[in-house]
Image (cartoon, rainbow, N blue to C red; front, side, top):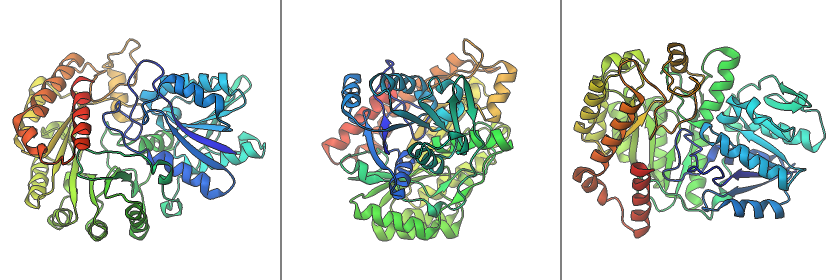
Length: 481
């Protein structure tokens, strides 16, 4: 069978959703390596062929999508659906059914996993729930062999007037068994990360999930899909899975051979312990890759900070959320404001650029005063960058249950609806309204990103007109949408 992995164009009048983090609209594009890993599994099987068609990357319009469908011969179209893309992707399904009536649509990702029944409006749509790789391949094998879908774990599908939810599939225990993402499908594309001074940039993942108990957190779209499915069945977060250092080294070597010189690691937490981190830093240094990652502040030790500084690390995203210790305790962050300060100082000591992620409204203890104090302290930290977001109470998290039970969801139905965390609040907390959160976000984005200190710090990072163009476009989207 031939399966084409689609990123549909904007069909419902909104900006395209970012599909790797999954909780914002696109600010700057990144390769969807979760989707590319599924494509690699399909190719590796030797039983099916794969293709990739990204209408967002190429800035194509609905008429381009329609022309593609009228001439394409795929048996299955696969779409990685996040919450913000549900409406758009369902519109894409309707177009596919109209122009390719015999084709099937395979929906993967957190949007499909959470909204499975909403997605199954047609028997030609099939939902792959949770971790997608093995389920997607088993589905294609079943379709190719005309085998019953009831025998494929991890599927939701329509059987006449009934919707069937097959038993869940066990998580992959050994990530080394997966092929590397099929980057050859995007070898002609140029992605850019304004935090990295790289000529050719890609992303990678060395682990899956996070063991910590933050009540609000869904760090990536793959994690979200895994967590929704695992929590539904077991009532708890799924276990963490780590790739071996040797397996990561093989992928990074291949990345270098493909001409990439910059890597953004998408792990929920990249830094697990000193031994593994120092080994990965040594590999990155030897390969001459510039790179960045996400980490917890309590993972930053002096040996790790030193290794990061020596190995070409150009950013560490620290999930700080707040500088208020009461709020940090309430949200289960497991860190203190003193630990935040210590991690920042260690990284700065070894010349590692620091990005702080601040999350407005992540606790009902939040007030205009706590928000103002956190934003003030974040700016005083004198780090490379501060990112301000507004919490979204994602279904499947403890914070969603708290907000729903207390009636804090400021939506017409009083239930969750997808929102862009870089722009919109759907919560009215006891001491902080949705409007106050949005005003604080806009005010601080303008005061921070247009400040002379920020401009001076980042101006030297860009060495070509293309880099300046990417940076200015990202800034425009950040400030104005």
